Length: 535
Image 1 (cartoon, rainbow, N blue to C red):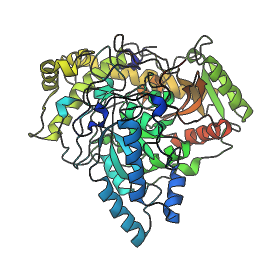
Image 2 (image 1 turned 135 degrees about the vertical axis):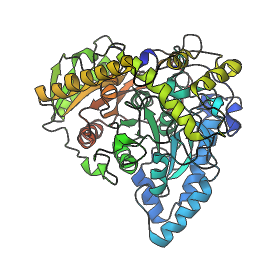
Image 3 (image 1 turned 90 degrees about the vertical axis):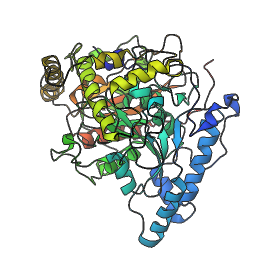
């Protein structure tokens, strides 16, 4: 199957110095065995744990923010130097104090009140933080207003602690791309084994959640960019239906496939965050169909018996007996049966689109990035995709030292979104992934969800060859714009492996119910040990 991983791949390379905003990462890295952070009570803490501490008065938003900042200093800027955080919010403590006072006066707004959250550095904030997609080309760029996602987090009472590192331009710049590397942020590391790759493009969000550098985080996905890093970093990730969460104010790749989504250590926490992010936004027409309802309590859908009587489709083309994760995947299927599910194997191709997905993304990236740069206004450092290409050429020692910008150049050569080539490719993607893909297969086999491997164990970070394809099943749901959830399924030689559940548009509640039952029935999540290498 042709996958976005053909041009947005899954491993990476060595780092460049971090931005001036967060210079701790430029320090030398002591051995990982000395990288343990002091015990703070934050390790593996859930939203419920943190809210209980706030309710009891043993913690405040300020104390939690200070503890997470200290942990970031010890594990991200020093110690194993994860490079998961690209910039810290200089106003985080001030915001936390205001939220503490509000809690005293009015009570909490909800389950996220006072909790520190990280968001990916392609999600705009109108504050003293920049939004750059990891590129030096947008260094110092301040958005004219908050993205919808940032606004929803603020409304929920979350403390936006900072921005997480990512694969630069969400891994849509060069053919030999590097997951977790950005010119501004350097190379993010996998917290489980530091010379292994965190995948991408939501690399920093995944690594930060795995290492308990925040309560929860927000990533973005076009095809695999939430699911894959969540899987290899041992956490839960949700790629929602396109249109459930607004994309306004997010640096784009694709108007038809992009979405932001939750990344957390538990299904419950991911469900809570999804409820806070969802909602209608006049600035994003994809949300204006009546399905993007604000205030939905997705956590209410969770059921420990959610697999009893469920029919789960198993596409045989995704499960290979020779894969490194074969035993983990076989055990996962056996566990689902023991938890009451009926597994139905099928051999239909869910998204046989050939090169059409790449064509669609290339056209839509050019249109989308030019619109985003125009939204930044005349004072922005860049105004077009061509400006970005020229900046990279002028700063090739820092931006193009490891891989090029072939995807930028290809996109720049594309015409408008009225071109027949684009329209034909888009129609093919939608038809084969929806009307001839996921929907009829689920109808035919009476399925509640479809199962897929989220990917194999993480490959090594490699500055010479770049990304290593570790497989996965993200493309059908990504191309269709349908929801997908990954949950930890076990480990291979100490490296996490995830399993995915995907299905029809706006079936998040059903998928969460199933994912929660699997999570609670197996409990595969374990904290990282920050090993230097295997063996």
